[in-house]
Amino acid sequence: MTENRREDVAGLLLAAGGGRRLGGRPKALLEHRGRLLVEHAAEVLRVAGCGRIHVVLGARADEVRRRADLSGCVLVDNSDWAEGMGSSLRAGLASLTGTGVRAALVSLVDQPGIGPAAVARVLGAFEDEKSLVSAAYDGTRGHPVLFGAAHWPGIAATAAGDRGAREYLKENAGRIRLVECADVAEPYDIDTEADLRHLE
Image (cartoon, rainbow, N blue to C red):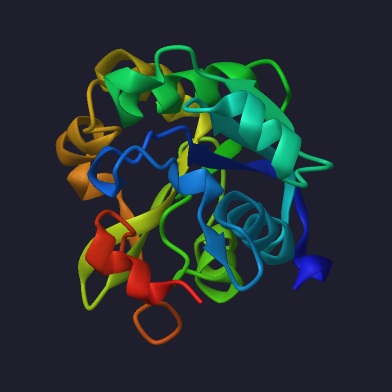
């Protein structure tokens, strides 16, 4: 899939959470198929065709840096990670500002059921800085989500707590292009101990 590499679209991986419902185990450090979840998620973005990948770290960031092979990625520290996903999204978009990329494709570290095929579909729907694209699963919006650069200021102004860009997407629902991905991905989250069964 890398022949469709897009240098003008960055992959933005949110991997800062502390795993509160997992007994304080950061999701980035969970293992899946013999590697850390954060490595797996970054590789998905790379294989799907994102030319630049920024990874937002927070909880136990030093340990993630030490243990994870994230070579080729730009690592972004979010000191406000405990405030929730909104702070990581703001930090990630800020790190992309001025780099020349025209869109950010946002993915979450705790969704290993979403692989390169789904990410590539969302990436393929990018048109310009005004693009607003989301994966959909049986018609329901999910991740990943692509935000053209024209949307970044509005997202940064409304992203708070664990809502991320939810408020902004709600306000702009009529402008979102949905790309169906249920046939190639499963959008489950690794949130609780019971969810760990999804990891191999």
